Length: 346
Image 1 (cartoon, rainbow, N blue to C red):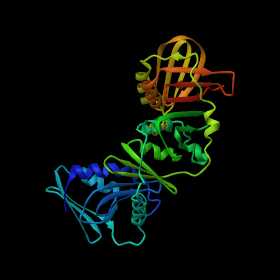
Image 2 (image 1 turned 90 degrees about the vertical axis):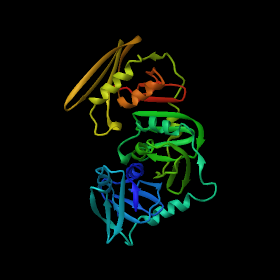
Image 3 (image 1 turned 60 degrees about the horizontal axis):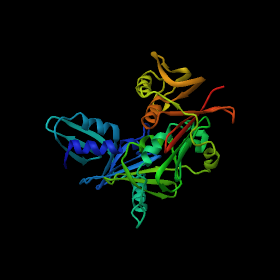
Image 4 (image 1 turned 120 degrees about the vertical axis):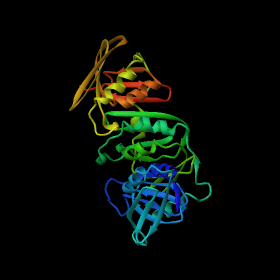
């Protein structure tokens, strides 16, 4: 079958987050062509993209993607024969082994997900700012999977919550949805999509894009401490106005912040008198920036993700402190729809 290479690459890029780094289950590292869709599944998420082909097979994902990416021609021909996927263009030929006719496949699970989501009135409208809320809250989740529900972004009515016990975030959406617990490692991928609808089934939350790409994610079961977290949030008081230049300082600090992935990066922020200092450091270098701040603030130090803080500063430059009321003392970033609380070190 002859296919447009660029169109196919776009489809593969959309399902690529569902490819596992290691084959923990059969086909977890594979791209699956079902005949009317392309799908990936890594035991946490399953992504299904509509795409018509005259063949069905399962092929190693990264190898297949990189082989296509290396071709410069506009059109490629893909043929499945003798347990091999063959890629042909005018100047390139490649062959990859494939799974055809094996009993242990994930196609059954994929078909089950498609059947669950095809029932009448399954899909509901997703709040328009859901993705934005999840993005802002996912930085406050625990990265230690033994912490259970604290590794999740949690929704309740029109609110999104997250906490790792040292940080707390709350976002108020412009609409309501079911209560679901989405693991942070899934949220990192989910926010890359332009989502419009959602639905819930046992153990899964399903999302749909305007292009009918279906992002299915396993959700966590457990009792989320909504009320215990919510009591910490309050209207702003005695606000400190941060300089607008701080956003650029955060973006620069992110380059020198230690952390394998963006969500894990952390920098030190210190406010003293009328100065705010941002310091980031990693094995190969460090950076420190000092800016003026309005007012005269006691010595305050906290640690925050610079990419996350840059996003906060796009929405608000307000900060207030909660001190000597509840242990530990806290710094609170706030705007009309979002609050983020970070504990101050002793």
